[in-house]
Length: 320
Image (cartoon, rainbow, N blue to C red):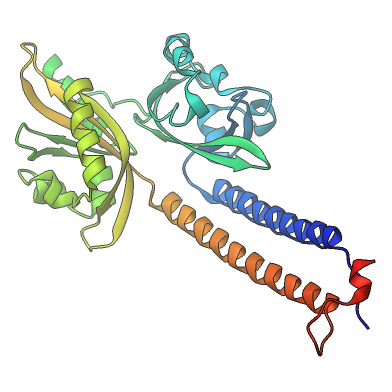
């Protein structure tokens, strides 16, 4: 016995099935983001892209900023910027989509009132149906103080700088004008697997094995020439050959006479986040394939219910 289903009802049923699949996928993405926030050792938060209000804040970010989740959810990111950074931020708020707005080096003002230097990476996404930004923060300078030491003022300054360099959580690499490595901190040793003594004097590209695409390399070169700094994401390799991803901040250095004397690169490991993004893309692709199979099966079932099994002609009841 054939079912009498009107074409309009068929389209509505198909649309409902598709919407359910889309909602199911969004829920899976939201769940994946919540898990990433929960287990990430790096401070991370999700902002509403329009109001810049905090939507989600992980434990590492709460510790870094000194506020609980409930307090932060009643604030916007502007509330944790000191006044000079607000002046830098406000002219850029009209940027379309606010994509990349917060990527780069910033000062934050946590609850204790002591300015915190961080590198932020910003990525657009949709969270619980809202346009949002996923922000990851890496602390540039440890809150620890340098230990007291005897000696001249210059010696103390050098010791202090060495102390700070090896307590910065991101890899810091200094190079001379020929791009040979002159400094390589402890975080760089951990990220790339090379000891400082092994890399001093080596070309940075040979050690980090950076993989540029042609367009990215041209844009980076142009930006460095005009602005003396560049921010972006790069694929590199560990000493053992495995692929790693970094959020890179590159700054060219000139002396008092304007002569180029080298550069400083600050790289923050984002491999875990890139792997999560790959997993999300695979999940989305799998969900789309499942949705297509279900939709095709549904359409075949509806066609079978409207036609005579022997002749293939539409059942008369389909038209009434």
